[in-house]
Length: 357
Ligand code: ZN
Ligand code: ZN
Image (tube, rainbow, N blue to C red; front, top):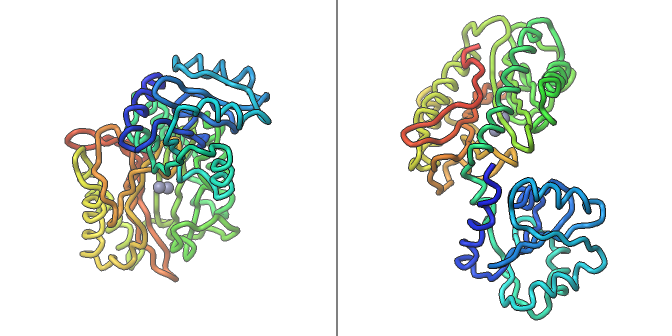
């Protein structure tokens, strides 16, 4: 991964954000910029220096992890002396940027006290914007996480025909992903059958999965901090006919049309509109109750959003999901989701499980 280039890119955005330095408080963003994976720390970045202030638990780990990335970050160990240390480091700074999305009201009040005399500037997504476009090392990690979810689903899929509960299938998928090398699951695995599948974020319960049920499996793995995200749907015993069969066909067509639209330079809202129009034509417009997709990376949900209200434009190297769905109370639901890399002229799927199950 090109961790060493990231601080320079961030520095280049500070002027436009109206600050001479940025205090990074999101531990995910600190990890992205420095390679440090500890759960506590503050990272101060100005035009010349980057200083990570953390506590004694990370005395060995922080310098070791940072050295492994080739970034120029100094490490200071301090707890009680943090305020004095940071006050000193920001002495010449008129405007200090804070990450508005990662600090609490309590943090803000504390920082006003700490940095008395310095004007605090709310910044919005400076590091998150850099994180949207993935480098080769990041793509390899998301690809590995996607391959683990593919393999886990292939291994566990036959179990659906044996009358298990939703919870049994979900925990079998979680175990399979860990056995295949995931550090963890990317989120609480969803296995929802029958009427439960009509809830997009259903939690797996004790319902026995039966013939004729629609079933939605939404799973992802984590590799080296990077997530994958994939959903497959099916009807136990075969698609049959009726509204369940219509939903399976229409949502898959919507997802394929959405994926065919994804490319560098395309508006995120356009991908959403394509999926929505296919489902509307099938009479399922009102049954598609969520946005079409989201960015995936160090967070399971990150920028850009692919929704009707999103104003972003897709760029090469972004990793996004395309996941239209249709949900009818009392009948069930269907969702197809893949994680793809945006490229010029199209996109490349990272989740490769068969689309027709
Ligand atoms: Zn998902
Ligand atoms: Zn998703």
